[in-house]
Image (tube, rainbow, N blue to C red):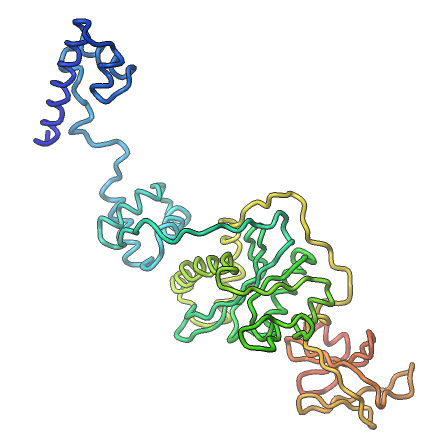
Length: 394
């Protein structure tokens, strides 16, 4: 036995002997004896019975000097350290523990893994504390509010790119996520479209004040609710309320989610040697998102959902860039240095001087609409394509 432990145990025995003698002589009660020893009355009675039956041997701590049956084997600790050092360097402990359980069949607890890595010096012990924050309550039902934001980061390879994420406020479900070179109108519309196609029409859309979301007449002032961007126009057509965030703290849920993604997703892409956007998007959508949602989604307060089935006009027609043009005398429309020819229509002799709307889709195809009527669809080089061809291309 170590000298310190031996001294502590001897002191405990002497203290108990003194309290027991006072109790046995009737000077103090059982509860008072326990108070003197810093224990409950019940504990004193247990010690008393052991002392009366076995003497001082009954007070010895039989665990001293024995190895705990829960103590991890040296080989397990070595495996944990080696795997972290060779394959998972940079992972946070919670993420690393998940991989140990799922991929390596190790049943040790999170705390054991954390202590093992700290002892080896592979991670630094985290400090307690932080800013005092007030928690904003989640929306009661899924579909009541959708967040969308993007993060520019070195997600894979050597260059930065943007990760655009669309998130349900009530459940933290990521309804859409993908990498792109730079966020903008098309990336925002894609996130909205994928969310509607997956879950249905939602109530409100919460974003920062980026120029593709809002017009801000005076820098730093409030956004315009009347002069709409293409994203704002599409949301209005869909009947979705658009809400602007005026501080990073207001987007706290999105900011924390990106912190998790930067901590986990970057390491997983690196682990699988993924260095290009196509492979990164495939891994993100097929592998990472299902596991992320399974782990981080929470149950909404209300079982009912605020999502509604979408039954309106084709969603890709609404979620497209739209610009008005006046038809030329030769039934053509000028758009992006292209001349788009309107074909002959049995319903009208011509569309000369009519105002039409150009729809520019994310795949760079286009269409000309007269009201709700589609007059023609075009490839990105301006050549007309049929409806069948467009559906095949989509």
